[in-house]
Amino acid sequence: MSDDAEPQRRSRSGVGVEPNSRTDGGSVETTVEAWTPSRPALSTRVGRPLVLGIVTLVVLVLSVPVVVTFVSSFAETATGILPRGFVTFEHWRDVLGLGDDQMAVVPGLAFSLAIATGGMILNVVIGVPIAYALTRYEFYARNWLNTLAIVPLVPGVVLGLAFVQTYPNHGRSALGLIAGYCLLKSPYMVLTVQSSFQSMDLVRLEESARSLGASWPRTFLTVIVPHAKQGILAGCIITWTLAAAEFNFTFMVVSGSPDPFAVFLYRNTSNATYMQQAAAVSVYFLLVVSAIAVLQLIGNRGFTTIRDQ
Image (cartoon, rainbow, N blue to C red; front, side, top):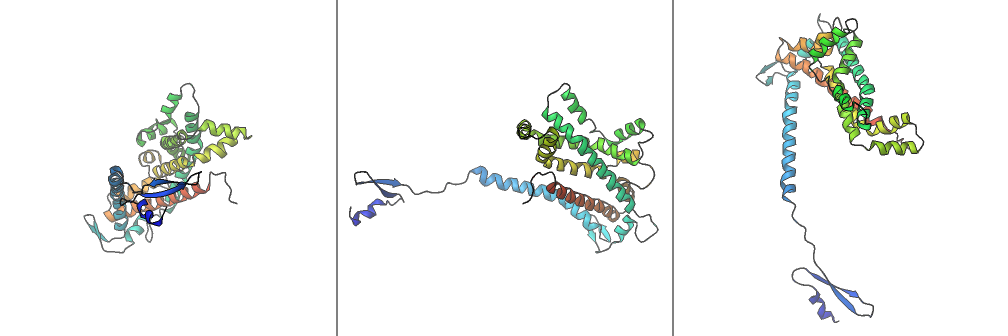
């Protein structure tokens, strides 16, 4: 074939013609069409920006009050929602009881951190096995046990009255607060961890580990629990943050000093100026952010069977 026939292999529409060899020495011309990208689907062009816009709007609606409250805690005055006069730490000193004759609240904050952490740990020890049993096994009265696991989702004042009436000698102690926080917030731990277990093939994981010689306790602690660490971490964060500021149950049960954090918030938000209320709430914000950061750090580094080489 001559060189003059080469341009005939290409059409004006961008379709190319390529020769292929034959066994008898000849050639066969194969038509190769040019690839043109297709337009994205309407759901991709419209749905993705729409979802992104909704998520952004929700985040702004939820975060703006927190930011405004934190900023207002350093203002001298406020007109409506707009703070004025920066920067002063007077409201923080009043809330924390520093620089005057007021009682310092640091012991009360430390006490609250301890009892909230104790209730969270107790929730892990009790809630994780309950969630595992409800997900893994079929047994008599399983549905009833599942219902009882979320029964404590009642107002704190109701559980507080029942708790004090049932345990009059120990209900108002620190141990009583820890047990009460565990009972009151246990549904959140059970439900979040149960969701993680339900997304796993527990039977296959267990059979694989047992076939390699692992005992049941080792299988549970080194295989099942690490796979559910995200649910356990979420349950820890929820139970800790809710227990730290639980007011109804705490107000019904607590007696004596130091005051838990819920009572601290109540004293600094009732009949107080807006800036003092903002400072008290900002203390809670800082504690929650710090607790979440610590729990995520521990959760990401723990519950794993993989060792760094």
